[in-house]
Length: 357
Image (cartoon, rainbow, N blue to C red):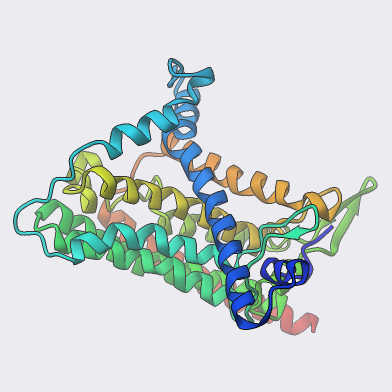
C-alpha cells in the first residue's frame, strides 16, 4: 500500500458537493484547512498537558497526572482553563505590535507546513490539501518561519534573557537548517522530484523480501546514514533535547518566552508541539514512506498517526535521557560535524545514483 498521487481533499469536496467555480474551490480549501488544523490541534492538546507528562514520568519512574479524570485526561481542559484565565501582563518597554505578533506566528508557521503534507486516507477521504511541484521546498520554508517568531519575541520583550533566547534560536537554526535541507536533497536525488507525493510514491516499492515479508523501499532503509543525520538536525530544528538551547530554563529563565503569560504563553506552548508534529510529519514523508503501511489504503491515516506519535515519543525519550549540550557545543556540532557529514552524504548519494543510472 502507498500514497501515490490521489484526488486531493478540496477536489473531493468540490466533486462530491458540486461546489461551483473559484468560490467553490476556496470554500472547499477552507473546509479542508479547518479539518487538518483541528486534527493537529487535537494532537498538540493531548501531547502538551498530558502525554508529555505521562511519557516523561514513565521514563523516570515517577507518577504523572492521575487525579483529574480517568488516567488524568481531564488535565487537558483544566490546564487550558488555568493558563487562559491568567492575566495577560504586558511588561514596560515591549515593542508592540511585534511582541503581540510573535506568539501567533509560531503555531501559524507550523500549520502552514501541514498544507502540503499527505496525511493518508480515512476511508475515501485523502487528507492532503495541496501537492505543488516544489512541495518539499515549501514545507521547509514554512517551518523556517518559526525562527523569525522566536527572534521577534526575544527582541520585542525588552529583556536580556529573552534576547539571549532569540539570538540562540537564530544561531541554532542557521547551524542546523542547512544540514537538514542538504540531507533532504539526497532524498530528492533518489526520488527525482520535489513533489511530496512523488517522494512518498518512490518509497512504495519493495526493497527486498525476507522470509516472505516485503521490506518497503523507505529511504530510512535505503540510506540509514542520511536518516540519522536528518533525525539529529530535525531535533535541533524543533528545539528538543539535547538541543533545547533557546529556552534552556536552567540558564536563561525561559528564553524568548520569559515575558509572556496567559493566552500568549499558550500560543508559544502550542506552537512548540505543533512544530514537533510537523517535524515528525516531515521525517515520515521524507524517510518513512509517508502514510504508507500494511493494510488497505483506506486506513493509511492510522499509519501517519503512528509515525508522527512515534517521533513525539522519541523526543520525550531524548528529553528524559539526554542532557542538554552547551551553546558552544551546539554550534560546533552543527558547523563542524553535521554540515560536513551532510555534504559528504549528498556527494556520495549523487555518485551512487549516477553510477546506477
